[in-house]
Each structure stands twice: as C-alpha cells, then as structure tokens.
Image (cartoon, rainbow, N blue to C red; front, top):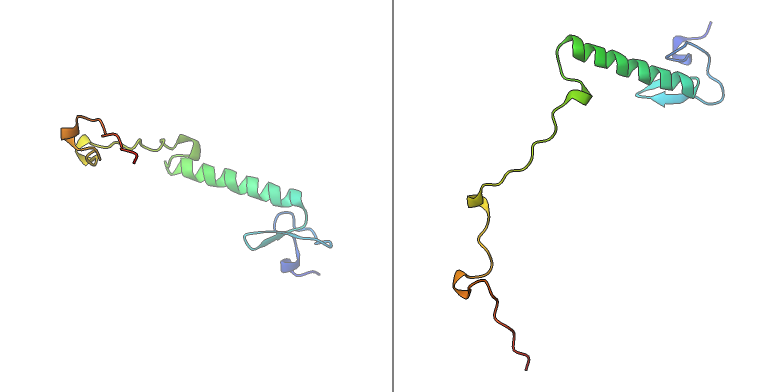
Length: 91
C-alpha cells in the first residue's frame, strides 16, 4: 500500500510524472488543485459569514484622503507679487 504522502491531497489518487503544488500540498492534476482551491475559498467565505465578518465583496471602499486647508503648504509665490511672476530678462 502506498504511503499517504505519495497521494493527491484532494482525491487521494496516485501521482504521475508531474505533480502540482499549492501551499505545501501536492495534487495529481491541475483540476484537483483548482477544485481544492475553490472548495477552500468557499469554506473560508462560509466561516466568515458564520462569525459575522464582512466578506471580500462587502468591504467598505477606501476612504478618500481629506486635507484640511491649514495642512497645505504655503504657495511658492510671495503674496506681495500679486500672483504674477516677474519676467526674466534675457541678456
């Protein structure tokens, strides 16, 4: 009898020439790996809803960055110039 470490983590099948890995687990086919990842994601979402946590789609959007006018640095143009930069004289 084959050891359990030489079997697929999803279906328990034997490995062929190629095995697929995910987080230290080995799978005999890409389909087994995909099915395991999907089932794990569903279980995780179910647990989150059971314990009252928000799901990924229900997370609030990131808050907008709001800056108070006092936090803005003063303008580079001095106030006595009237907002107009002097023209540069080409020599």
